[in-house]
Amino acid sequence: MAALDLAAIQSWVDDAWEGHALESLAKFIEIPALSPAFDADWEVNGHLDATIDLFLGWATSLPMQGLTASVHQISGRTPLLLIEVAGTEPGEVLFYSHLDKQPEFTGWSEGKGPWIPVREDPWLYGRGSVDDGYGGYLGLLSVLAMQQHGHAHPTCRFIIETCEESGSYDLPAYLAELKDRLGTPDLIIVLDSGAGDYERLWVTTSLRGLVGGTLSVKVSREGVHSGMAGGIIPSSFRIARNLISRLEDEDSGRILLPELSVDISDELRLEAQGIADVLGEAVWTDLPVLDGLEPQTPGLCEVVLSGNWRPSLSVTGVDGMPSIANAGNVLRTNTDLKLSMRIPPGVESADAQAAMENALLANPPHSADVSFEADAAANGFSAPAMAESMHAALDEASLATFGNPMQVFFEGGTIPFLAMMQESYPDASFLVTGSLGPGGNAHGPDEKLHIPATKAVTTCVVAALASMVE
Image 1 (cartoon, one colour):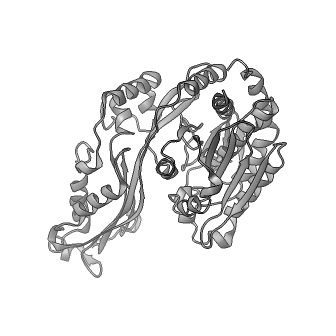
Image 2 (cartoon, rainbow, N blue to C red; image 1 turned 90 degrees about the vertical axis):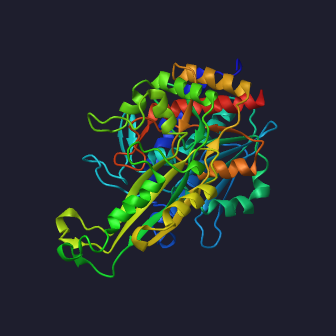
Image 3 (cartoon, one colour; image 1 turned 30 degrees about the vertical axis):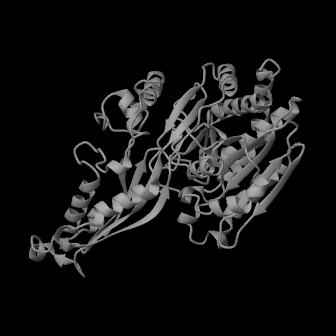
């Protein structure tokens, strides 16, 4: 690392973000590019295409040597951008990010909104800013920094998709179509992950998988006065509650299906304790919980493990219930619940889905009409051990830019691409990182990018590329 002047690179990175990258990212925020799961007319509306056009215009304006780019669109599927920067040394790196966005949501602060870029240092507000619009900018700037400072670099390819927030269901078709052009990456860099704080580089070593679907319980053809039918027609809500209890202990939140859990090793427990030691009470208090609420599992190490290496169930939506203001004394016809089951790395999503279906559908109470329609399934991810040279390079870069050494991180969310790529390239190393830390609030109101941390992560990625050449 002696040949890499981290201070000079960090200064250049700062100028590049301030000079043009943040301006283009702000224009990206203005585009309401909802992922296809949230915009049935995405192809007609053209917002996904607009994000690719914007990013491609910025990328091709850079003084990057050896850059080629192509837009791909299989009929009926969301578009994908492939960029290649020819290497000056052996080795292949594949970068991943996405340009599609979550819906607007409510509760944005005054003067802010999902499609309104607002800079209030250290933040840039707007939907897609930190999830994951910045990723492509960061990746290309890291390669350009190598060139601008006279350093050799491996061949770098960039996959930038527009279906991630819908589960990346279009991505496998593109991976198959572009297999020859993607080569055999030695390192896969994913810039769509989180950070425990903004004081060091966080490298994600695991993410949970996901099984999602809708549990539907039907009991009648039409609503009936609850005074006439209550106690006679069984409540669809009570039946749904009973079925959920087959999956989850209602007292502790523990998932009851053994197929959805993995053994937690002593090594994992030590790493979880390391995260807890760095973050302290912030592993709990950084969440927007109400005063007095206690965590589901007591103990900071257990909080880390429960949010990352244990399964958990959330009910994220409901149909069949009127609002309280419009609720009369009527026994309802049905209760439909949207279920989101996070599963730890090592659990196959297909096996988890089958176990959930078996538990929910077998012998329903009162012979009610019960169905479960799965709509999402993705495996988790556990990274292979990082090369010592790259670990040392990232440590040094984190110290130089943040002032603290690198820290491993567990992520409770899901990035389906990672499992796909690990299955396709089992010998590749992974660097999964990002600048989504406390307060970033991806998917929610006031989503925002921490600008100083993003700049620092850019320099750390430069260090990772340099370690490959060394």
